[in-house]
Length: 189
Image (cartoon, one colour):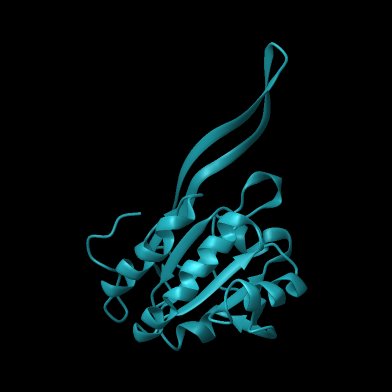
């Protein structure tokens, strides 16, 4: 099931208003939904590897976060925030993976320069995976959407906001409430 809030982006043209694009402001898979499987090329510390959701889940919960574009201000802030707290994610046996539509060469640079070689960043050409996770915006960018996926493959928590400041704290709180194989009690997206 998907929760959606729709907004209209407009531009003022002379004395009239022209609708430029319809975009999702908050769309995400809701807790309890089976997480779509994926296989992507990802980089960590500049080294490329193939990652599969099912293999990541075998090690514990997965924090999957979608972001619009590498090397932009908000996405860089979010990458720093995840990198600063990666030890807390590791303590909770969680794997962090960021995903955008950028090509793998861009992700290799982003993984070292902005992610501080602390976690995986994946290339999702055409936003194929982002679309399956209801995290694609119009105009070819991913929406800033974070998921906690429980080891049983279900969405335990989801949060969508273009503001990068709360994603890390929110997913850490969700992970702390996540018992092995269960959704966190009392968390709302």
